[in-house]
Image 1 (cartoon, helix red, strand yellow):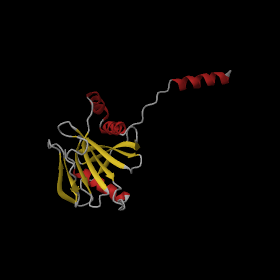
Image 2 (cartoon, one colour):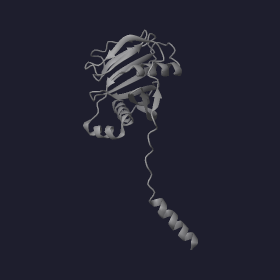
Image 3 (cartoon, rainbow, N blue to C red):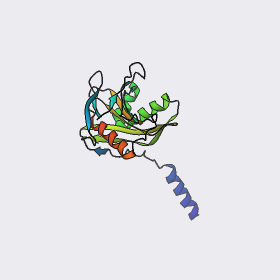
Length: 198
């Protein structure tokens, strides 16, 4: 009898337990100063609501009519082993309320979902979304990999005029030259990110 009462009490308490979704981790804080030398070469949106600097000796690639209209700038390092891609991120009106409630990590999840749709499911997220604060600016972050490609980091943000953007740094293995180390990759990513003004 006691065992029956114990089991009944235990089962009832299990049936009504509500689990809360896991909270997003707190944002990482990065230095507002680039970790590597940056050039005077500027990436800028047509509207002028976003600007960023490129590392020394990087060059902008002519993308006119050759790439998605959402991409407004692509730059490569001197060895052509890394590409910095700057693009507009279109967020449907129905998702604006999600962004206002859940913030930049929700935008990172939307950015990743957009990549998965565009690649026909060939792109997979690596790890969880996160956020980063650099001075007064905040970014949502995620990492992904496509089949047969290397890991890419992406940062999403909203400009002062309410437009959504993404910056990603993609390893490119077309020249046969060795790719930058993970530490160098992270220094370059963080340095470009530190110069993004919006």
